[in-house]
Image 1: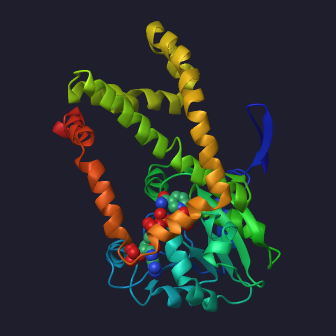
Image 2: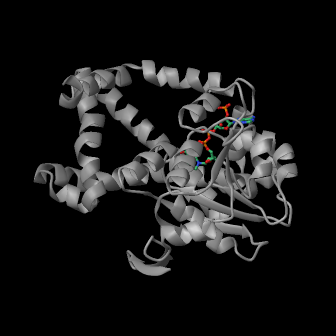
Image 3: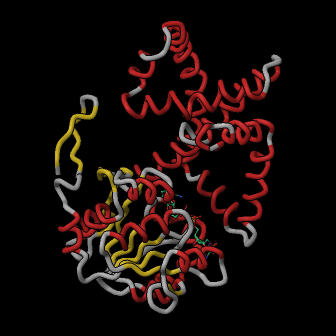
Length: 349
Ligand SMILES: NC(=O)c1ccc[n+]([C@@H]2O[C@H](COP(=O)([O-])OP(=O)(O)OC[C@H]3O[C@@H](n4cnc5c(N)ncnc54)[C@H](OP(=O)(O)O)[C@@H]3O)[C@@H](O)[C@H]2O)c1
């Protein structure tokens, strides 16, 4: 572990300097990692592990586009690609990367496939923390751990291929083998994490559900829509409204924030922009603070979990979600966005 000062608080984290890929390979030498689920996170982690020299198999229900994608990605039916139960039985590390609702549905079968000493691995605290609702209570004779990449499975893979990484949190819920910590770190490094930071299952799921409903996705989509609509209502063209709301953010300003922080981005805009941003940031902060309070309370109380499980447990959950996403896709704002993107020089060439 290495200690770093995060804005005045010293935390212990792990990078490849503290735990090398070579070490990770040694720790996982006798293991078969079964990645259950080939949705978003499954492919990212499975492919990175495979490229890093770890023995990986995939468990995915057949007759599904996700199965076909696993085949396209080089997993071979009967050799490295199996049904969920078969893979869970073969794996000594079972990475449970079905959707959170899918994990609930498949648990009675998957539970029977675990052998003493196996490791059950999650990328979210959801199943365990809300066990009253999920019914997921692992047997006492397995390790139960979490490595949660703080990014989409798509970027887990993309960043890996570009020589970068996504930071992940990790936690140990149950250490049966006495080696849960080093096995977890090995997996965290081998899936291509940037750095690993410790958490608990509770802290991971509370912060994650808050983050995606908040700044990362829900709040972001909400404030973008509010500003776009305001500009349109006042006679601005779709092109102007979209550029001032989304394109300038994604193509310019947020990149500067990623590189050097918010203060640096402010400092590299006009003094007019700085004055306005400094004055208006506290107003937006205070306006949304009560919504965030409400959000966190709904997460901790488990009400958000009930909603997720109800919505995503039906057989036609994908069709229903697709219909809702289609509404966004078909909205004027995002149709305008498609045109703006098509006009980027690299897309016109
Ligand atoms: N999305 C991310 O980038 C991300 C980031 C960090 C952590 N995580 C966590 O990683 C885990 C996986 O998330 P994900 O987003 O990758 O999930 P996802 O894309 O929604 O996963 C779908 C996978 O679950 C399978 N599945 C769904 N319902 C099923 C059922 N009833 N029986 C059997 N299989 C079922 C799907 O099979 P079909 O395709 O056949 O339906 C597919 O393989 C979750 O715990 C999530 O919270 C995700």
